[in-house]
Length: 494
Image (cartoon, rainbow, N blue to C red; front, side, top):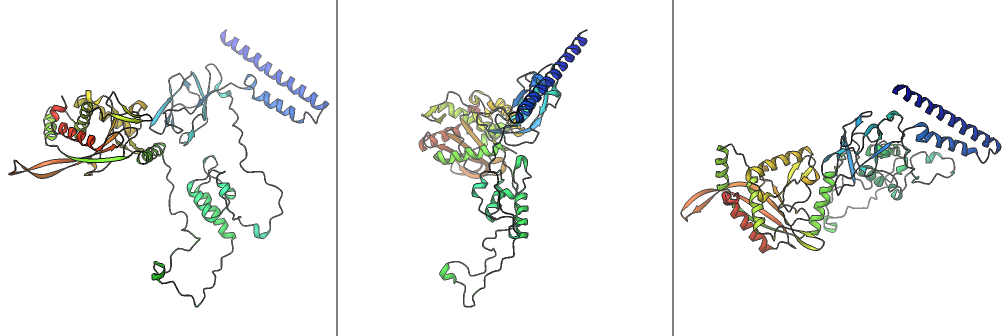
């Protein structure tokens, strides 16, 4: 019974749609016959409007747009679609994986329905916020009949060509002219822009083969080869017999013949464009901001790891695995709790004390350097710090960090000792005040009691501090407090 009623309603709807189309078409034809000049374009426009109406021929779509998945995100990359066209989608279901400027985040659906059309495919890069990436149909609607919105009208960047004289034989080769204004109106890769600028080629003559009309390096090289074929061979000017090469004493340069020819750079194709990920672009931006706006001050100290290594061996016998880095995190957190004047950040209004101690630990990943946060590290024990640090490091390498797991933090630690680096200086992570650079351990002989030589395992740490917040005297006292806790690990872990 219910199926019969649905079929009946569908038949009535299709009949009404056909009748409406027939009436509109008939009315347009009558008006066009009475006044063909005024209504020549109106009939087609009315029919197009009617054919695009969701109530007549299609299903109104639910739009899925590129969201802002981090505070600093401006564009994203579609890594993988987790649903395919025709799949049922409930609110909260994962739709796709999007690479932001920080990590790969799963985008969830906010509505129930059916995924009708994927507009931006997997692997698409540089998708701006608000871009339409997919369409959904509401529950009960035919997803195959979903309306695909017309693309936004694009105004032509170049004025339409005017009538010109027929080309002559001399004009058959590609035209060579300055292209400074045209380069800003077309989509060019950096390599293509360099080739076209160097050789003075018109980019409008290049056939774009890249995504979304991008002129690639190969397109520019192809245009360059075409222009070289149509250009007559240049005749070098005669060299006067009386000319002599300038002496090296007069010019300060060697007198040998230069290998390169002026105006003819090296042959293209000697390099490869490597696209920077969103994560690396943000890292570059923040590093530039840090080094150009923060006055860095540096201080180093040697720490004896003998007590730490002995305690690690004792814990290993009890099947408790902790690393030297876990002891460092704990010592830093306890030192910040005892010296709150170092636990500050720089804001627009000046120094801002922090009420919590969140330690950022630098982790090297394939996408770049990430800094997951161990929250309230001063209140955690060594084993809890070890488990938390290991889990966050793995999530960072897999690109699965959540925004709250890498945003914020009051102090950063970067440890390169495991890579064989003896000591180094790190760049401050704004708006934080300090970052501790940890080098590797080394064995040194030192006198004990002034008479006996003993081997000590020493480690050099360097504190990079914001001189506006932590001056040299405060940085020295903090390093002394940190060394004291690290060399007495049982006291720091209590």
